Image: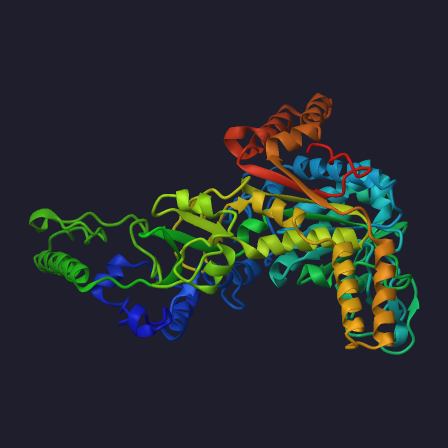
Length: 611
């Protein structure tokens, strides 16, 4: 059988999208569309995961890295509600809206849960708060504001040594030292420069709010300092105030905000003392944007991976469409010559019109198809064999625990898998364990288990569109399999188990005489030190519906209190109630969105509150 990557099989001709028939049938392209077509022409069809990764993260034209970067420019409009703003991605003027944009009640409720875990740990004096994919910064602002105003011990733990870290004053000038390794404080994992700028702007606005100023807090942005490797003498020091460094407000309490490209670059230990810093992590509408692999069951009961190819039609279809278009063009120009009104242009519909009657025009791009399409290869792929655990034919392996379920599915069924999501959940759990405590919340839309269908879709201006439409301009997303995330965390090998395996392996190597005594001593000492600092192993709990979670965190009671406040106007009371309803009612966001927790059991026995 020929290779599935053979262009002669999948790409007999590069379609001419500028031909009359294709101009009517296919939607307009984007720079990333053209790049993908050229790439596929050389490499052959690509996986859905690679398509999603390129569509969202391409260095120049990706949805978040390109379009998302533009959304950090030009300031901004109203923060929440239905007002218009300049957003190109998130918000009423963008393509979708998230729970934090609906109401700050969402962030306050998440903080209530984080506080329960903080109190279980007896309120450590130093902590770090990590948000992965912080969007416009709305959620982190809501959490920090609520912490400063309502939970001062939590806020104080974010500032205990935020002004410390490794500093080198050789850079010249008072307060212009270079800082590295600040673990305590807030860490934002964000790859887009434009979104980073928008997050900083949100934080600067927060720093000017009354509650922040009155409580004596200020913010420092760590990346305002040179992040190069510090040379020369290193010492622990407080970086003094400098107007150009991004400091705002009073100096009684300073929270350091740091930005990172990946979670792995967030420090787990204090750079000076070496102490592990308990970590609290939030992922809100992040996993749904991670690349997925898509698999489909075909005739014979075997599986194939869905790939993305250039949209090419067979000759008969093209000939029929060309005949219809030619007929419509002839009628159009014949009418124009005698001064009559232009008849409608031909539709992009595949069904031929009877008697060559005028065809109504397509409404916008609604009936136009993308320049790319889904295809099935003739043989199996590495991702199919490893993720779905099938043999070279595509049939489930005998030792596959899901074999019976896969065999029971009807022909045409689609299953999706998100390896990056599974690894992220495991990395978060390992980080909490390594940091000797903490907790995490993953909030997204999906189900407790695979939906068993095709959930990949695109969104543009709050409307659902084809996922292969206009890559780089359209948000691409898929439902989250929370069951898979939970099992990925709970079935992983813990740090202690990993160390024990390394020790056993080292011991066997020494007995075989393949390793020296010095090497063995180093490994054993390191393992012993780490095993002393590991905390109770974190587990994954849930998912539960967002509505149930928020209700258990007291969102209804807070709304009642706000509404009963004499200073709350009737209009404000209505907005507050409407926002709560949108967040918790099953028909809106309450049931569709789920919450998964990662945390150690209290006393090794009790799951975290709400789960």
